Image 1 (cartoon, helix red, strand yellow):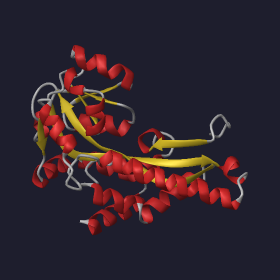
Image 2 (image 1 turned 90 degrees about the vertical axis):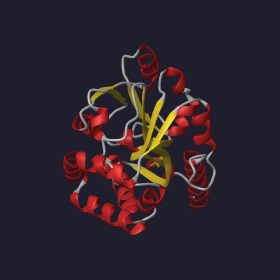
Image 3 (image 1 turned 135 degrees about the horizontal axis):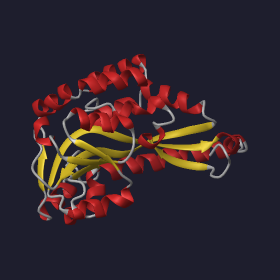
Image 4 (image 1 turned 60 degrees about the vertical axis):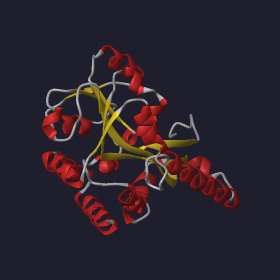
Length: 259
């Protein structure tokens, strides 16, 4: 975008975080228990602070979207407690924070592109992976030996709709409002798609599809999530300092108020 190769982009905070450390906020382990907490962050002061950070990078952020909470699947066994992950090879896409999380839990994290993930799962080169449920279904990971899935909402991946600043500045005020409103509408649709069928609004079609495909689903209780949160607290504290202590504090306060 800075080089003028592309004008618009929908970015993942996971993909932005290596360049913009504050975007690691959404990857702090077990910060957000569910959609209400996520919404509190993107729609409040934290979301505005992050947009101000992004605006210093020669882009104009227009709307927050969502790529979904990232759940854990594997070919070995149900995961209910940190010890269940010990020794398991878990693929992650990118970001040192993910390596730290899985190392802290006793697993063997393996960084790998999505293109390489599917053959790696089918051959057993890795035991498991973490991705949103609807992506799991779309890519039929149940056919790649992923028969166990744990819903733990350990991190979420936010989406950001943004435009290159020189392009934005070339628009009239009227066109800017049209583009901004279009981005907001697209973001709403992205959020709805990320949450579709997961039971948040009574629609459980995606969860039912997992059962139909024979995937054993474990939905962690609050107490079980707390055990994982306690196990990964050193990672949380380390990365909260890198994200920014004040930003992390604001996020924790917003999440607490959303409960």
